[in-house]
Image (cartoon, rainbow, N blue to C red; front, side):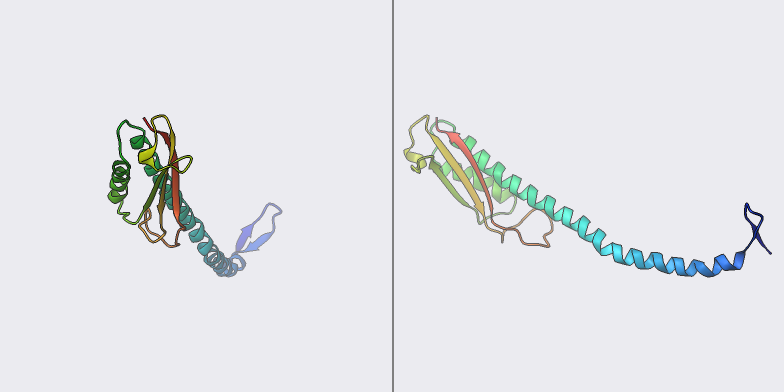
Length: 148
């Protein structure tokens, strides 16, 4: 007993049934080979997104420092306190700040109208966004402002 095809030939049902386990085994092997690559792509994308988010956050902190420093009668300590508050909210406590004029003048000695640069540097040992499988390099954000 069998199945007939378009050429009216009889096909054996048993012949197809014997090849089915071999095809199933092939699919399992292909899946086993593809699964690590799939995991690498998914978790690599997550890590890349975390790194981009962390860098963007540090740049945002430096921008907020430049905005605070651009207000009238603000001391360097107030700018650092503002940036520390933002970083502390994210659990980052080991950042370093550099607030200087574009000609390396101390921020507190700048005259109104002069440009200054705010740099925030965060070492890789601090908390990053999300779970971390790979270590990040030092994150650095810079922004510019004009003292009022």
